[in-house]
Length: 390
Length: 145
Image (cartoon, rainbow over all chains, first blue to last red; front, side, top):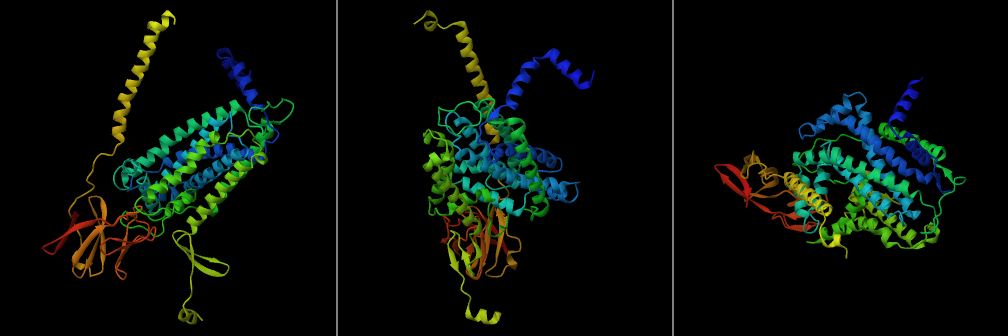
């Protein structure tokens, strides 16, 4: 008797494995709706990136030391001395940014297919929570290398918390572990990043997957008129859709490694609490909020700005209850689709303005200084300078 | 209304006891844990700090020091020394002194404050708070006002 057979009979003698096998078979061979396409792989890719982040994160933890004196040096050590340390650090850094992108793409697909509608409202809400936790992961992890950019981006980020009405001061104090960003902040962010957030996210992902499996993938039929996919039609989850996911997963891993090799993240200068480098900007996923905040000035400007920045997230949570239409097909819901496209374009536009603000750019052969608010000001070359240049 | 709804049953009492017991125990564990997370008060260093090398500073030059854990910028003018919080009141970046413009400039969002810490331009909602400067036996000390 082979070893696998022995293990199987050992388990069969002790547990009701037949029932478990039936459930697994049912799930594995479930038929997916006919419109299931390559756009339906972003959920699995998000999960793959979460697993990759967990594994590379654990590997980095072996050498990382979360104190202001050691953090930057330990990252340098991981990069320069540890075998493949540079690769794991880069995969972790790029994985973080790709995970946010892939979760966003997954949300867009869900939105445009009307998959947030009844009975999947809770699946959508857990998805929004997963998205928020993912960007919180990015924010807390960003400080850990304890370099100049990270230190001052965290200073600005936590100072923004101060503008939250009524509780802002307490929130900033609690986040920082004091009045300023110090070693206390590093400890707090470290604990959040490596213990609290991973467990929270794991729990949410499990609930999200269970809800998704319980309610099945959405068809494009009207709310209340969805019919189960018959066993002889639709797309088999295994092996057809799984194979599709496998192909995209391999491509994603290739992109991850390529980016890690060709576009490595710099370690940067160690944090200096007495010198702010010029033009601190957050990561790309915070750029729309960063830019939006700038348009609110005056004594209550920042407070109003923070409220304005929280509106999109509030809308995301409430959207399944605000959009009560029965239709799911994007062509039959022009308003919801237009609203989604408008939101996306606004976020991209604000993000781009945030990216180019306080820089010099060339448009149509002319040089412009882009001010804080994103307005371009043409740079007129002085006559004397031009002659001198010739 | 049935008899069991009028009079509490033993099972109902046990349900109630378990509910109350779990809530009280949970609260008793959560309150100290939340208090533990609240940052303990720390002075963050001395509140009366000597500005090292102040006597070597020429008029128009500045130096950033930490007073009580917070960054303070000390400027030497022809009349003596002046000190202001170096923390921009917009989003917390540290301002730098521009001796030529006689302004404090924030490198993050292009804010400018005049030599008295008042907002000249940019998004800050408030001026830079001043600090007290004392000169004793050729040494310069900075402390909160």
